[in-house]
Amino acid sequence: MNDISKLHGILIEEYRIIQSKIDKIGEFELKVRGWSITLVSALIISLFTGKIPAGYNYYLVFIIFMV
Image 1 (spheres, helix red, strand yellow):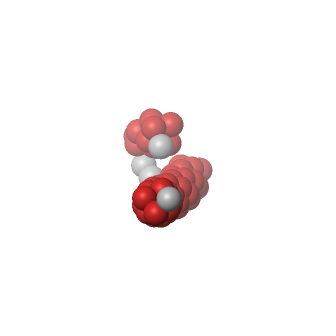
Image 2: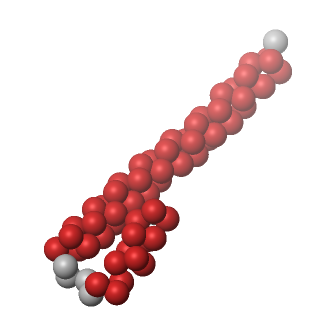
């Protein structure tokens, strides 16, 4: 019985470690998504305000679709 409780404790600890890694991946995904939205918004605004020369508009559209 003692071996089973030790194994149970080890498995619970492994589960906590894996769950913390999954949570960190989720947080990173949200950060990347937020920065992508910010970047696309900035590129679209600069495209419509004319802050970037006309020759680069195609490059910006390409970058927006890539992001």
